[in-house]
Amino acid sequence: VVYAGSGAYSVTTAIDELARLGIKVMVRYANSGGLSDEVNVGDYCVTTGCIRNERVLLDYIPAEYPAIADRHLVDAMLAASQEAGFPTHEGLTLTVSSFYPGSGFPTPRGVMDEEVLRKVQLFIRSGAMNIDGETSTLMVLGQLYGIRAGALLTVGNHLTKGEGDYITGQDDLVRTGLEALLKDKLRTENDAV
Image 1: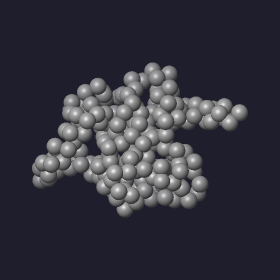
Image 2: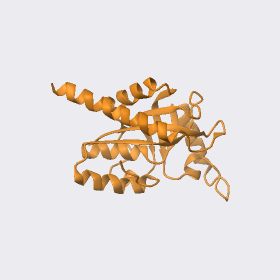
Image 3: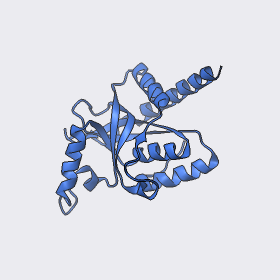
Image 4: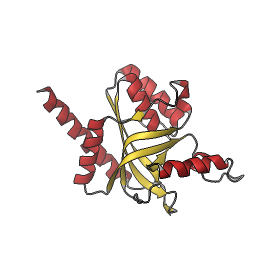
């Protein structure tokens, strides 16, 4: 269990150091903002892949490189979330570089770039269910370093509905996530037999 701070820059540092130590699996349990109309505050989002709009990873690999979760971890997180009785969604997470302007929110000087707003709306229409600042980093570096990666995110606020308080149900989220890791470990052991 590692707390790596906020944003892709902090997460890259933690993952680079953990990869040197030989970790095999990493899962992000955290808060996110809802984007899709189907997602509500308090729901869980299991990320299958990310829309890479964070730009930090350009130091590692071009933006065209996909950010995809390990399918076995996705399945384990879906099963654990559903067994725990939480409304759970599976799909794409939009990962951005900055909290306010990257999400299309006004800064103290207003919206800095109208194109960002248009892109966020395009990503919503294209299937983004939620938004954060870190998950694509986990997925991309996991693929590059041979580390299985996944993300189980709760929706603390909803950007288009204007609901929520930013932090929702973190204790339940972590318990559910740990149950998912146990399910994945048992599957791995059974596959080895």
